[in-house]
Image (cartoon, rainbow, N blue to C red; front, top):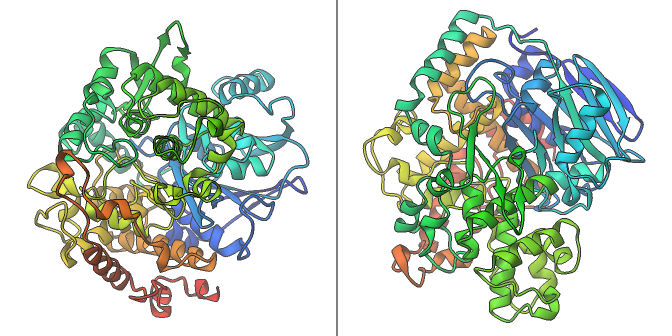
Length: 624
């Protein structure tokens, strides 16, 4: 038994309506921890190669981390994963809120769902008990309606849920899983996997508090962060604004995406920032359990055209950008409404924005016509078109049926040169950060197993000069600042170490917005479990997760050829800060080979070496 953990994995087979638990030994937990580690382990260990992501044979894993369910700030998150219907490879995404917190307190370190129910169902997990309940009456309901109906049915308040809406039910590959009404496990089409299993919702409520091996030390670390976050990282800014406060600065340096990455200047950026949102529609800031940063926006609108219910939260930076500058839209109210629709219908706002931006550029260039769009003028800047097409995508109607599976598949269906306009890696649309500005992050966009994930690596602009950003990398043997557009061996080494550190954090599962250092995260784990855990083990854990995910993708047919940025980023923008800036394709290729070598992968194919697998304790993964 490991202190601080539930020491139980919950298994559910929906096809046969079976529920059981399994217990793993201490070596398992020390090697895989939780979160991304457990997700990647089960996908690689249990899935047969080549399974259809929307078949009953796929599994859906919900995995909190060791610190989930404790008072540690930023420690309430969980990782959700499955084989991706968007990429055909690994999908994993983290979500905040209370769901993971309650799952851990209900007595489980993870939930693994397999099979497919013969009719819609939901799971009710409470204090070690599990029920498979009928959800036929919930099918077709929004996430908010589902929450209210389940609470009324169970006679329980503050039930925490992970649900899907219309997009997940209709198997849209850009759908996601929504926890607690407003938090998204967003990337890779996880909502479609949930919908393919006829699983409408997982509802949880728990009361068992994990007991730390050294509770006083653990409380001391948690108190320190809650007292000192304002002076570290972006804690103060996140507390006041949430994400998106620096959009004007992003615009100035070329990091803000504009009109499907085809432009680099958005004249109306001041109209859509988190600062403007604070002064207009924002009514509150909320937070996850145990965290004083409280970075989650709550908005309310009572307009003539539409209303926005504050229970559905508010837009983070990625959403402000993806529905704002990325689409050439300056209507903040419409952006808030679009964000709400994502929560209600379970849509990934990043892939949704990327796919609509693709469609708008297709329309502007005549590749799509009003006849294709049902008369919608799908042009950049048209906020009304944005809201209309979201409804169509969520319900797979008209042009929405073409766009519901993301820009890559839409481009394949449309043809006529549309493939050049679909800006994605492995079928997954980009986070809202330009790799021409952050070229180390661009390397991660290309290589990360789950596609163009902006949370999988370092953001180069944080480490270009002495200051707070250097705190995060100096302990990773990167003592000096480096230019954001550098792709030297030193930069690739930093990128690799940060990628491993991020994967370790996603195994705990820790929020990236709470400024824990790697050493502090290790100290939390030591106090929780009583292990003599080290910084070396932490980075090794991150390397293990990345390597298992790499093996999974290779097994599913993805190769080094899929580690490729779109051509658009190898050319400068027509105006603005990036008018003379582009990624050097030869430098990026050298950086990729260097990254492979530093990871212990073959420098040409990117296949992990047998010796590396053995070194990481996952020699079993070579069987693919």
